Amino acid sequence: MNRNDTMIRTTNATTTVTIDATANTPRMARPARARLVANSAAFMMAALLAAGCGSVNTTYTRTTPADSAISAQTRVNDLFQQIFLTAKEVRMNRTKGGPMEVQIDVENNGFAYKTFSYRFDWVDTAGNVIPSQLSVWKVTNVPSGGSTVIRAIAPSDDASDFRLQLRQSES
Amino acid sequence: MRIRSVIVLLPIALLAPVACERARYVDTGSPEGIITVGNVDMQDILKASSGMLESLAETGVLKTAKNKPAQLVMGEIVNDTSSRFDVGEMTYRMREQLVNTGQAAVVTTFGNTPEDKQAQEVLRREKFLKGETSEPLPDPDFSLTGKITQVKRSAGDTKQVTYTFRLTLTNLRSGLEVWTKTVDMTKLGNKNAVGF
Image (cartoon, rainbow over all chains, first blue to last red; front, side):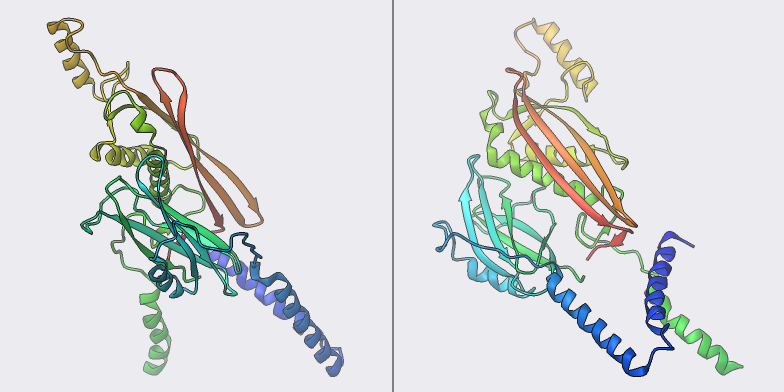
């Protein structure tokens, strides 16, 4: 038996214990038991709502997009909306060192915690992808109601545009 | 008897393809790969090298070197984690990017423990034959050193490990640190998993 089997069994055992605990009230009167079950369910729902499944509150002080916000935002948004996220703003600037930098503000307005991975590929003025060790898959999380900034630096000064790929976690 | 055998064997036959996953190729460092809690994975190494390269590019520190392109010596990068892996997995990827794009040249003939002893011997011989000043040995601008550390914590069955990759670039003429970067990777869970 491997270690995973043990853990699966432990989880099942926990579930069984919970079910047994509910069932171990045979001497209680039927209406009382029904009331208990109803109260427990209501309490659990209230607890879940209060916890908000790890949601966060976010505030913004800026009211208008940055000067460097680019028109690619709509296309980036199309991509993000497929995994129920919103690209609030897309900025591209030239860094102090020379290559371009892209920053995308990603918002999660849904009710679920989102995990996704992304990869930026940079292209030159002719549209050719610049192969580099910088284009790797990175994973990030956005809690419900929260936001994150995904960013990437171009591998060379020749890079003028980027391509973004997204993969959503199944969990 | 035959019906009973079919009843017993049918679910097994149906579940068999689910239980065993056939070997297949995945992109190196892709999120589909195996994610372990207690080890540094390939995804972590690629993310670390990418983060370091991004920082080097955005600060432009290599462009401040006297030599063009900057001459770089690879110093010691210590793996101070319980995960056994070759640090070269990270550094060679960085070197590939820096050298092949012309941002830096790695000096492999420097110091008492050079990476390429034969090349160093040839250089020394040439220098000796042509005179002390005619063909100087490489004059590197920077050395790259670093350390990889871990912080492990657990709560019940759940484990959390943070792997921290730190690199430092030292100007060999001034002896000052001119660039440093930290890339963190935190993993949480109680068993290894196949990514998504």
